[in-house]
Length: 165
Image (cartoon, rainbow, N blue to C red):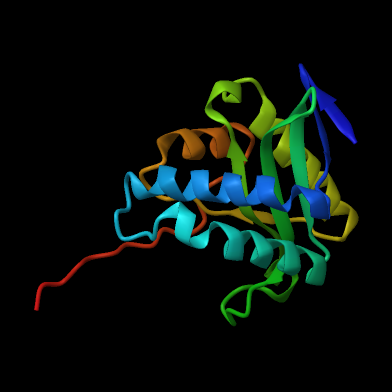
């Protein structure tokens, strides 16, 4: 599909489901470091990996793997989504939604995430999406910096507060 320095990006296939589950578990564990209310990655990995595969298939999405030699070093998943918010202009409601992106630690800061996002943007654009959305936990400074570096801008911020009984 496309190639970066030392890696290539290619579509995910059914045989890659165990890889996806491993990446999902790693994302979850990384995010649990700053959001302890999240379930352990081992509890959600297989079912969530199946969910994103099914959703991508149903919503004209794509799951792409970054591979160095034959080893997977990252992935991205996105699909077409629609915002039902009546306050949003009709032409801005349909968008590509990047549900997940992950790069193994030893391959970070080498352009893998940037190239995965570019590849998914190209796919979504071919399917008529002119806007993409991606979310990150507020404490994930590296992800936030990466997304801003490739042109994403904050759209909405959600605050949370735990209230004692």
